[in-house]
Image 1 (cartoon, one colour):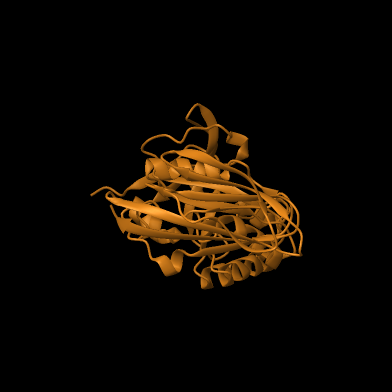
Image 2 (tube, rainbow, N blue to C red):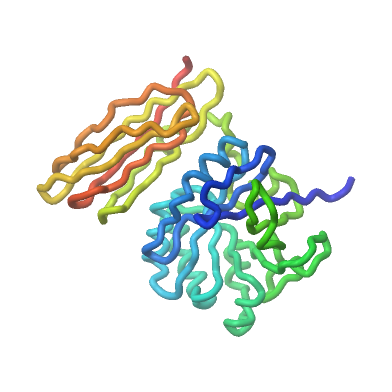
Amino acid sequence: MSPITIFFPDVSHYQAGLVIQPGTVVVIAKATEGTTFLDASYFDFKNQAANVGAIFVGYHYLHAGSTAAQAQYAFNRMGRTPAMLDVEAGSGGVSDILGFVDSYRALGGVMNLVYLPHWYWNQIGSPSLSGLASRGLKLVSSNYTTYSDSGPGWIGYGGCEVAQWQYSDNHLYGGQHVDFNAYKGTKDQYAALVGAAGTTTSDVLNLEELEMHHRLVNVGDEVTFMPSSVSAGKCIWVGLTIGGHGGLASTVNAQMYYDAAWHNLGTITVNDGPETLLPYIDQTNVRNVYVKLLSGPPVDVSAVPSQETI
């Protein structure tokens, strides 16, 4: 039996408007950078990946220093979505990588991939990557050339083997030129690699695990909860509660994604203390609950999904 290699894009706001193509097996999309940049296309690509049945991986572009703060910032955006760390120009060295990953995992984040191209590894002194290997982190390389299963992008460095090769930064996909990757294995094997195994759309929701909480601290902060898709014959009711702080009113925008479209719940004033915004939304295939802080002091957001047979 011939070995299986799968191929897939990684994207960001630079490809805003790109349509994820049917049959795509994996989508990797930028979520955050440093402690100030949120990629505006992240949730669109995440929804599109779910709609075509693709494994979805978010990524954070690492800046040198402040690794714990960056980990919190990235986790606030990606939660338990499988994630990759993007390490290149301005990202610092191995200590920054390990500091970020350790902090991110301590928050509950899932991160098994590190994109660390050979040119940047050389730039930082060709250090040992044993600390990555000991943490179970898998190396993603880049080398832009004609792809083959024995090509140069598969050659390891720093004591690590290459698990994924970004072999093109100009591959035509969906009418745009994008970065493209290869993985020597099946879609299920890739799911296990990144930590997405066992999270198919037919899974029954575990309510205790899926109760989700997040604090929006600064105006402009936003969060999107993704409870799950649900199997046929099921519906989701999502209770959404928002609590204010500081004795002053805040305003937020809330939206829900169901029936393959966003539904704007409007701008809501949130007073100090817990306030139930919506007892439930009775719709099939609720994928996202989105809240953005528009003005005022911090707010705490909780989304509680449940499921029952129709």
